[in-house]
Image 1 (cartoon, rainbow, N blue to C red):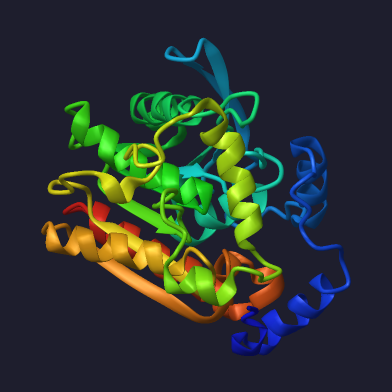
Image 2 (tube, one colour):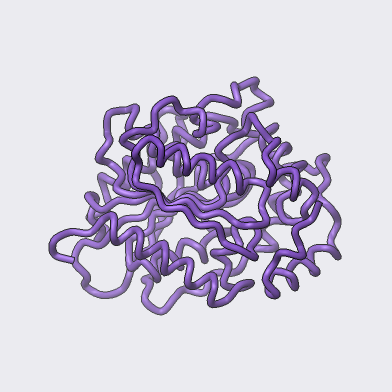
Length: 323
């Protein structure tokens, strides 16, 4: 089924353009998919109040690799501002510091926070758990080095969409499991994958053949990320919804799109957090498709409003007495 009839007019126009392109082909190689994805991403136009970004690297001790980072800082002499560690989307197979630069810069602009974008290793060359462990190394680096860029490590939040939304939630689990529960003050997860073991929820049935994020593409991502190595899809570091105890997770803002196969599993995870006593805020964006709520190039003011809403949540959860 398709959800085109549910979209806002801006999304409908984008949908019409997609219909002119070839449907997703599971035989495509990751390199071919990345090339196509990069051509669709907006080029960076640095927002008015954001400095030129600087690059850094952090050793990923668990994988023996180095993780590239890109740091965006707001202009001005603001006292220690919040720190956002940002994980991009791309199905664990695609995306990099350039492809998602505009999103990272927009977070810096709207939240007036130091944003540390993470170029975690991609499957299939680096299957699970490489992205998880590299992201954890980057998160710890951010906490240790944020002050160098004007950020307050005690006001640290994690944000990401799609695969990055998954990594965002997994970082919350790891901080608890590795006895660093105060490392993260807030989680913001947009359109996340939280259940790689069950693709039978109603949103999958409704939108399984949709042009935006068809079920076949999710299956392809999962094959490259964890199925090819025989990893258990119910491992909570792959599927956070199977974590046994969510108590003590940081305050969490989960945002979904109405037209998205991943919508219902994300709502189920938010409900599970709430039952565990976690402070959770949930929003389903009507008339939107996968990740479109942070795409001003498509949705204009509605997407800008989403960035503002995320910024407000982050500031509320990381506020200090001097704010």
